[in-house]
Image 1 (tube, rainbow, N blue to C red):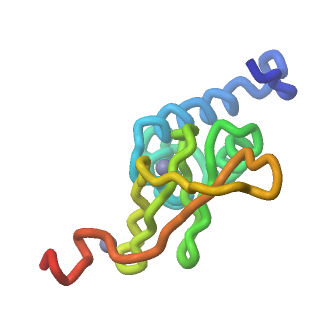
Image 2 (image 1 turned 120 degrees about the vertical axis):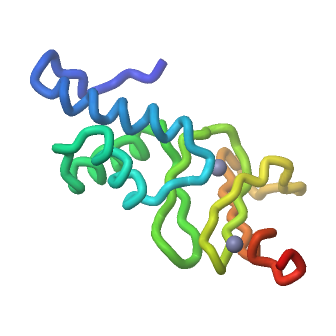
Length: 132
Ligand SMILES: [Zn+2]
Ligand SMILES: [Zn+2]
């Protein structure tokens, strides 16, 4: 277990609760929502929540390692609560970010590599001309 440095008794409970709602929702998603998409959904679940609150919770989830932040070449950052090591595929046309769990990187790193962030860019199946 990671020690949580900021568990204060009651004062920030509602804040923590919101963070938990956000994390729980992200764990059900496999499409790597953007911060805007997170905000839209949190607003649906908790109508009084502000955009800055959602963004702050996202940042804190990333900082504590509960959520991974992906940065495709273009477009906004995307968030992934699935923490097992897996590569991603970013569609340059529709901006879908898809899991590519079978991809591994072979070879010798010049050091002790602990995390490998791979985001391949290309056209997804929906956007490939072949499939139209
Ligand atoms: Zn696409
Ligand atoms: Zn992923």
